Image 1: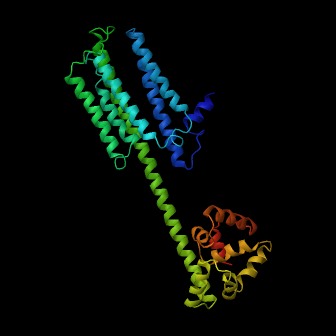
Image 2 (image 1 turned 30 degrees about the horizontal axis):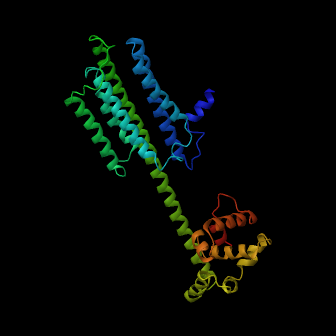
Image 3 (image 1 turned 60 degrees about the horizontal axis):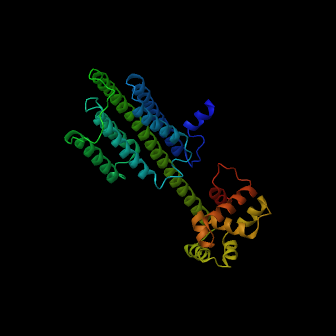
Length: 329
């Protein structure tokens, strides 16, 4: 049971495409655990020290709502389109809860500090550049609630009959401590999120750099092959034009310009079919997957599938780029 809970918290039950999504889900689950423990503490504290069963029951309901979200599978993948709207809704509900308890404790319990806790949590869930308007909307709602509770009487909101005058000092101190703790925990989670994003940026930069290096290598190999086969610019323009229009003359002309390629290819595996040889010929011209798909009027997925079969037939290791392998034949 403990192992199962640990796997859920660590996001191991989620179907994600990359490490960033996996780590971000794990971070969200841990933040939800923090909210679960915070609300659980207040639920128990209120009923034990003040005997306020109604408020405690309400907080327990919210406590298990966080618990439910922890175990909810596919929080990001399944609800991606409505995720931000749901988060905004939760922030509004939490703001109203803070406002209620601020008035409920006769504005003397230090509950108002949790308005700032909500503001501190915004950077964890939103991006300032992409979600500027959503952040502004949330800040305005929190500010209006805070100002409204300070200025308006709000007599329709009940006041607690369980808290004595002497208890307010303890409650205020407790709320201040938890507000500061919440701020520090929010800062930690924001730091972890930024660390994830910066890691993703670095990883993307490395991948882009690797792709650029591969393109340079492929182009250099192509130039060497052109020189070794004594091809002119007109020859290259001719064969590229035939490839672009998927001409039936393409393979015939290709074999004329690259006479050693097909025999060398078939020497590795004589079981290659004509469509696979055609794709190999296009790769020999340094065409990438999208370009091959366009020239052959096929989908990218279909070409990827054929390239995979070619890789298997030619026994090309998984760590070697298939285009580089073909260019060296």
